[in-house]
Amino acid sequence: MVTRVRLIAVKDVPLEMIEGIPDELADKLKQLWITSAEQVVATGSTPGGTTALADHLGISEEEVADLIARARKQLSPEIAAEMETPVDTSEFGLGAIKPQKRRDEPH
Image (cartoon, rainbow, N blue to C red):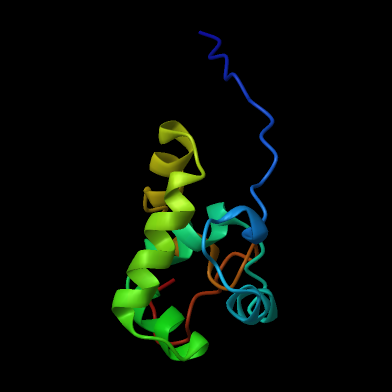
């Protein structure tokens, strides 16, 4: 059986398109390599993401939640839902390199 996947090319929504985001905050996000509304939503959806963003940006978690909500408004419902869906990357370790077995693990 052949499974077909339909891919849709979507251009990211730049931070500057998020309504009400101050330039200073956009610059701080870019220093964290977060350059789009999609990345704001995805980062905020990770465990501890809101807290980490608040710490790195020097703002409250409530302000981060507002930022995420504003970013989400710039996305289609389908894209927003995809960005908020957890992805299991545990089999990849640190990036695309498959984790090596530890010496104390059975072979």
